[in-house]
Amino acid sequence: MPKLRIGILPDDKPVKVTTELPASVHRDLIAYAEAIAHESGQRVDPAKLIAPMLARFMTTDRGFAKARRVGHTPKAGGGEG
Image (cartoon, rainbow, N blue to C red; front, side, top):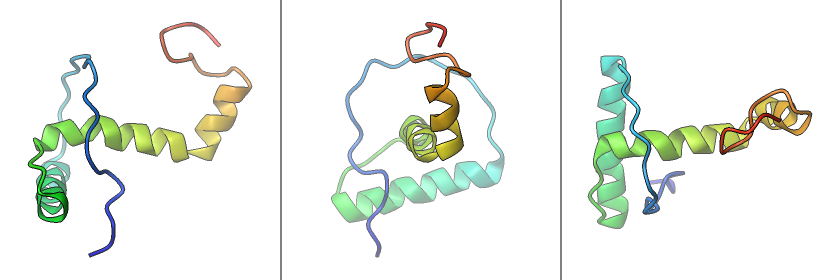
């Protein structure tokens, strides 16, 4: 099995967000959590995968990184860029 992009989850202070997901995305989150458990032995609540997956997506999105560098998006922490 190839190495998963999301591994051990950091212990970070959460901010609660409520959203709805398509059933297919929820099934994939469950499958991903099962893959992590199989690969690392770490049991993970599938919902806890959403934040690191979004973070990974945003850090690898070149368009977002460029927009952030030129100040077109708010910076982390709520300040205007």
